[in-house]
Image (tube, rainbow, N blue to C red):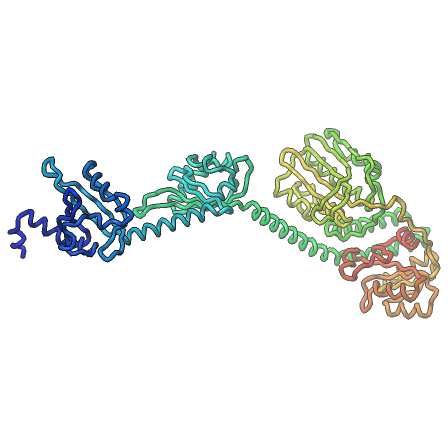
Length: 627
């Protein structure tokens, strides 16, 4: 067979080659366009045998539309004048079916004379369907990308220039496509990020590992900023050559703010739980310690009334020691917001004016101290002594923050709040203390109200000062906030609810009665309390629990005062007081406890309906409450 092929002439071998090709229709046309030869590929594609088609015009393979528009004639003219005609289009088989063809027509010359045309046709219907599907997919994808408004989706060249722009990018960043396509994407970064090389780092990372993802501030056309979640993916062709980058940006500013708010809420909850735990611990300690102090204090009061020969300086010294012990429990209770308060209606301006001389003595001469009091300031219901202590604490802290001198401003004014933390909307009195001292970092500012937290050297501060102020203000129905900038100073703002009452409206006018029933489960305290009341001229009855007290009341309906401990076994003093109020409405009720009022409210419910005195109690306080 090989020898037979070699015996053929070159022209014969060429003819054999063309005739054998089945994947291409290869045939000749005469100068007029009539078919003059036909190969196996033409027979397979078009469905004609050679004797059916040779001598026929090739236009029969075109669609009627192409025939009517003169496409076959233009194809031959183009091939003759330009040396080649090439196109794609629909062609028609013998059976009338159509296929998508890739067509090439070359002119054939004998010297300068045109003797015909060589025509090669290939059926690429499947390739066209694949291309059309890909194009449709790309078109759908483009429409999808263009329709997305919540994400900025766009392409970057390998150098970082923007090559397209979707509606989301326009909405989020504020640029029209014509304004940004062709420019470098680094324009969306903040100036510090550009200087640090962050845009280049993003592309380099995406090129090296295939993807870059981060969050950070980005800049809109109008100069405003938003917090962005950014993903950059490298785009490569089949050979691995980098074609560019796909960049997706989403504005997550609201989500970031929500996350920060959640973190702050969690931190506040943790702080609240910590304060509650400390408060419960200190409340129990204070109760036991106050009971011990009550025994000593009551004993001293009795000694004072009965022993004229004892040196009064000794008794005074012992009383001062008791007062210091009581003060210690108050400090421990203050930051847990459980200290017993004696609120009354006060004008804040008058309190500041009356205390201003003390505040000025606490401030160094190197500090320029100003007091600015707003006119027409409404009243507040506040414990005067605790308020003065709180303001003094703030002023001293401001002084300590300005060792080289500076300016300190104490200011009052009325403000309207739409809502501030836990405070309800309404009118409030603001008392602010501002200094021009060293200021505090955000981390320190966030912790200034924590118990035992201090930035002062060992021995210079306990860390309870601002914690006590915070506890007192919150317990008084207000709030306190701090603003500080390192190197510029600090401002603390106290907010107190406005009271509609006038000063002096809460004065008591009742006088003591003649018979008192003392109810106390601790025998030492019961006997000392009885002795104390006897020294005041009362007839005293004693019961060691609520059940015995009710039995005594049944036999002595003329009891004028019931003086009871709150925390007792079986029946509490609160329960006893409510029965007494119902069954013996003429008897006045005075409750006492070593536990602070807030802790009692938590355990016993609302007890504000009854007069209350904290242990250790003294004669002047008892007289005041009894009246």
